[in-house]
Image (cartoon, rainbow, N blue to C red; front, side, top):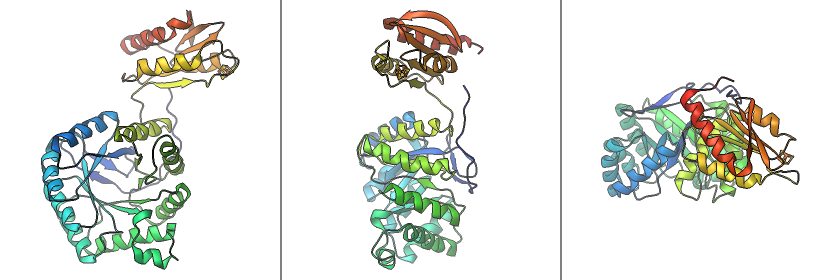
Length: 368
Ligand code: SF4
């Protein structure tokens, strides 16, 4: 199956989040990575670790946890050595929590320049991160923009105000010789975040973390995030992504991974199910057969493309081009394996045949 990528990536410098087994490089030509954030109290060590493992299994390369008080920092110190992926500590308001998270051994900090504003506090954290070789994400957020910048730009959150916030933070970092930064300029408005990232990408070669903040519940949150992140990725902008959904964060990790796979920016690890939407021409219950196929392949790590098509209009073409495909006609389906029509199967045996052949291809391989 050919993997076609959407575009060339914009050149950025590399930042590496250290981890004894799974370090992650962001920028510098590294694969675009997927992030998510835990929803547990970080002081709940077992509960948080359980969620981190679930996120990693769903496709998260990096996981962020809040470090909002001393108990959370103490939790992080116990979580870091057992995490399967690099951890980022999310810091707001209290720069001392940044220092505590560094002491806990996190691989990265996220600082919000909108709510840690005293230069001496910012520089204290950056100096400590510099000495420990830990990168920092400058996480500008439209909802918590520095009030002075908000006023400067006419009581409005604008792309220019968000980019200026990031640049002010970078200038503080520069003063202490710290350059290991990633940057995000998230907003809940898709057009605003797209414009902010476009502007930012012209002004820095730091790697960029993309996201539509507070995108909300499914399905709207998925649509907004995909519109914003996907548009930028298609322009070559973005080195790491996070879906911010009001949902189980496992959905964020899955969505991020699926987007990158769909855009040809990461290798597929699971089945790519192609199915027609069905219409009055359909010769089988396409929606039900596709649902069964999705369920049958859900937890299988098989990087194959599988097509379920309802009639002869587009069916034979899509089924032939996929690794495995069903093109329906007259309540039965033509089964294609690597482009060859090898059998005719009744509707109730379609999914079983697809699974059987998927297993066969994985075990024996079949030449196209
Ligand atoms: Fe309709 Fe056939 Fe197209 Fe499916 S493949 S949407 S059944 S015309």
